[in-house]
Image (cartoon, rainbow over all chains, first blue to last red; front, side, top):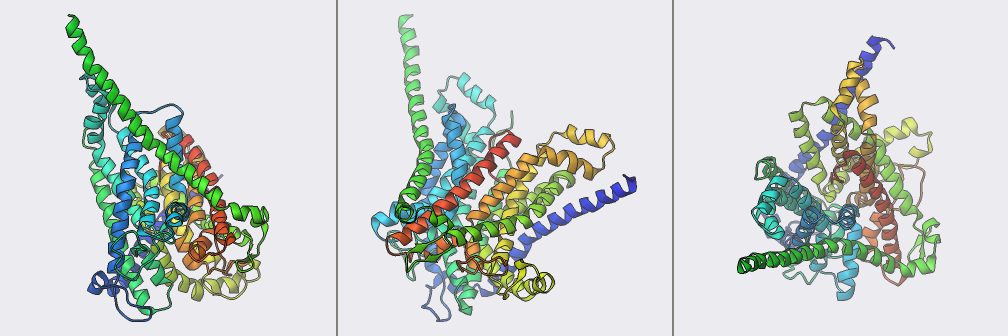
Length: 281
Length: 318
């Protein structure tokens, strides 16, 4: 083959790779731009303080959905984080042949199960026995999604803790659990915390598992024992409605949700960028 | 002497019991992960029993979906799910792998890390936000510009016929493409970065151009990981719910034309689960869930195995 031809192919293809990168990454800015443009012009104080108005009336807000989302996410985190964290400690520190790889692989598969199917699980476990939709059922669904995320993140960051720290603790006479509790986990704590924030940010945006668990509510929920409005589902219901004013509210809610998710992501990753709290040995 | 030995042994015993307890505690929580997964399979199996018993295998092959007369055929939903995911991959694989090559082979480390950070942000955007944007920006764009153009130029093909609506297989495939390439980029990039440096140096030393080195040496070396990343993206596309529900048109019928409205498994579950009444309808929806679960678990399982095989550090989440 001619050298000139090969060089031409080289330049064209390398250029195309750059174009691919530009196209893919520019979608992020397109998305953020649209949300800022439409959401920013629709966002007002009522959005945060008022309840939704009946169908067709102009105005109102999503105060109940914001509170409902917070409640559900808090409960999901309270259930999912401890389970995921301890399972992650097991995977990193007590590696049994056979069982640990099985748990690890299962966690990865569970992480890949479509969220709408997790919704079915929570529906059969909570909605069917209690015979009504509830925010609690939604929290169960979200916690099931959170567990494998936290498990794998915890494991990953504990594994990054240098072996020499473990050996040092054991050599000083610490028992294994004391070594884990006082040396390994504190050393990996920054990474683990990051993983938890990322996991919570991920479930915070989930709408599909809440469709037939938390359902929706026009009013203040108060207790998680009844149907509860959430921000992601509000976006869905408002966006597919035929009313212009509701579309406006969907954009506003979208902007609020994306702001929360991105703030959590950026801050978590900035913490992570500083590395784990001990120098690598 | 004897007392000293006894005193030394005492804390040792208690620390051993401490270790045993700690081990048991974390083991129980690790087993919880397994338990949840088993429970998921069990509930899907039991929940779909009425539908499986009354419909049998015809559930998978019938295209008749009529809850009123209790006829349930999953074929239109399976078709819609597969066709939109396939369309998504058609767009996102070249773009995603291309971007991964740029990020691992061409961009300086700092730029690459910065851009990968942006890609990860893209992966963090909730599905319902993609749906919101798709409804108000992508659908009008497809309806007014892209689809009339496709129809006038490629209208002789069966894929681009029928009225232009904007909410159809093609639009759903487009939004799924945007949702899958972050996964393809970040996992492919990791596999490409795991290729040993001497592979590149050897090819360059033999006189290969940068592109030839990348395409004929580096990419084949990382092939398994790249395919794994594509499967991971595919599994995500198959199970994607909110965004697809919002733009696919929700029409349970099979059309060859990509400009026709369709339905997907996840969208049908999302739309009808709360309203399903009777004995068979809810269970038919659970069986749809079971079908989707099987599809994604097979694809995901293969993807994880391939990624484990290339990075050899244990499977990593994108």
